[in-house]
Amino acid sequence: MAGPLTGLVVVDFSQLAQGPFATQILGDLGAEIIKVEAPSGDWMRGFSLQNAYADGMSVSFITYNRNKRSIVLDLKSPDGVDIARRLIDRADVVVENFRPGVMERLGLGYETLAARNPRIVYCASVGYGQDGPYVGRPGQDLLVQSLAGLASLGGRDQDPPAPAGIGVADLAAGLHIVYGVLAALIARERTGQGQRVDVNMLNSLLALEHQEIASYLYTGELSPRATSGIASAYAGAPLGIYPTKDGWLALSMQPLGRLAELLGVDDYAGVDSSNVIEQRDEVKRRLEQATRTRTTQEWLDHLLAHDVWCAPVNDLDRVASDPQVLHNDILITLDHPTAGPIRVVGAPVRFSGTPSSVRGMPPALGQHTAAILHDVLDMTDDDITHARERGAFGAVKPVPAA
Image (cartoon, rainbow, N blue to C red; front, side, top):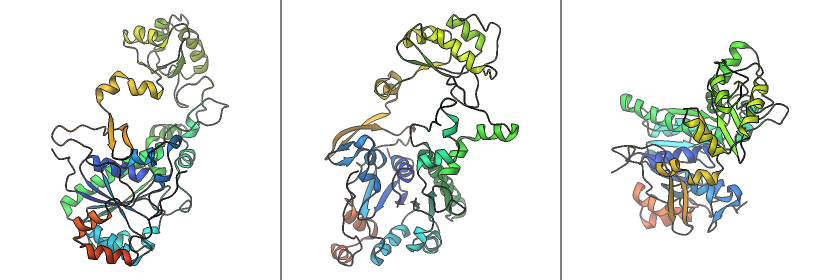
């Protein structure tokens, strides 16, 4: 069965993480994703976490770019820009994450494209906004986490701020791109008109911090990080990560007196609060003395039997073998024609009637250039040869691996 977005055509100019994450989600849902790349390719082709490359292909690129076809266009060439415009004329959605003003300078800004195709939904995603004092700054994930205050909320007091261990600003922006595009498409069904959708990483991250920001704005007081490792600067005990005899145990919010009793700690009988702010560091250290006496699994067996909110703190090796992760069938294998089998995270949402699917591997640079021009623009082989001679595709020179 086809996915829920089958028939939707997306022209994707994005690279790195936020845009490709969003368009991969749309592709998983059935949309046709035409990935437009410069002759040097998406920057992510030359970068991979842990310098992990499968047959020369970046594993990071692979994880962001399934269900897409790649076309190489040199947007510095008039013929390259002309082909891009013609593709967009037949598309439903454009996604780009260039710095503000780049698409306008290329002749591919929203006003130009909407004049040709009024139904186009055009989504631009940047670091901080399309204008304002930071418009020229680089929008990189760690920088946005730091600017948005997220790094200041984690870790222990007196230690350096602790940014999240994943690119949460990029991923949050990617999800906002998806829901912004889908909302604009629903609006188009009512009005017949497309529109521009603007997303930025800073706003996307602030939206995830809304509870902490609202608390500060109401009280006017900053909440310092705990010295004992309470999980949030704005939360109290017992929320946090606790040492065990052989690892770590996460304990969530629950009445302190009941938890202490189950841990064998007598100090907090009758304390019903699940969010003890006063003396939270003292409370956590006292509970840690108890959690160190058993293994993680022993505590899980004991506490889960009493419906205590707790979980093991898994490394990624344990995540990959976790019974619920395996049951959810979220880890899938891509059988790449050159890189071989690679396990990745699949689509997280299930549909009863229009399931997500993997229909195509992450593409080689420009792999589908001729096919896209044949299929979408009805160009002949002679047309493609002529465009190539006029520089529409540039000289393909992939960025070397970092």
